[in-house]
Length: 351
Image (cartoon, rainbow, N blue to C red; front, side, top):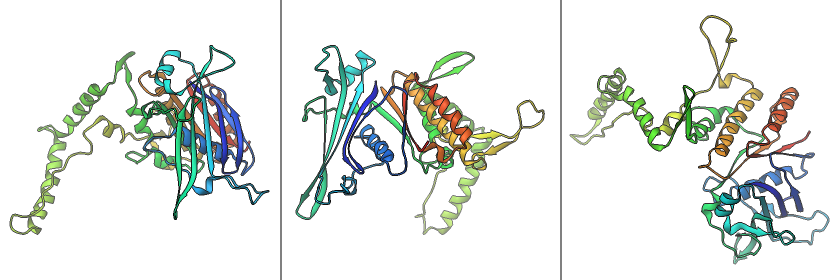
């Protein structure tokens, strides 16, 4: 499935707009303050609806203001999302409550959901009432578990690629990529990577650190005892705190959060010991290309794996803000090659 049509009403600088999208790459080009960011944010609101990690919400200042008519008042924001169906069985089954019948073509159905924000006031309290429905009729309830089948990643114009690539960071994209892998290749053979396999691999790794004969375990216990000795000395009678130290993490997800990215200094053809640049030593443009590649790897993996989300999108604002013109050309050319991967891409640009 892919988003083919988006309608926006009374949102920020947009009174009304209807946008048609294609499968694959879509580029929104316009001057400053022309509404590009409003469209991207409308996508973020809709594609992220009902998810706990949503980082955007509607405010009073998001209501459209008519610059030419100070008497016009708007109290309702509306978003209409229409998706084309590609996998008849899986998508219709999952989004049954979202189906809309094309009145002019009995063989054609689409997946639709609509989100309305109504600005209301009760006493001194002002708030937005949210309403969402599927299909053609307002009031058609939609199951929130179906919305979990919609996934997207947003790269904002002021993104901090270094922080998002850093091991153990809050928004670690490298860890996200490895967490969603469901198979890996070893010796030319694909090996399933289910939850049991992940537990096994993590246990094998930490056995190296924490086995009774391991020097790492002895080092850990030595440091643990030094801290507890001081805690015992500073306590009152037998009432003193006691701690137990472990190496960070016990799970597969903890291990992959610590994966570090480095760039080789020398060409691989050169002999001798290789040295590496840390991520923070790279230029801003290069780090953003690395960051985008990690994100694309995650998204394409999700599209290839039938057990993950049915719809995956990438939203990118102003990639030219971080890239040299030559890099911009190669970046856009590469994105065009991803038309058939299943990822739908939305980009804003001044170009």
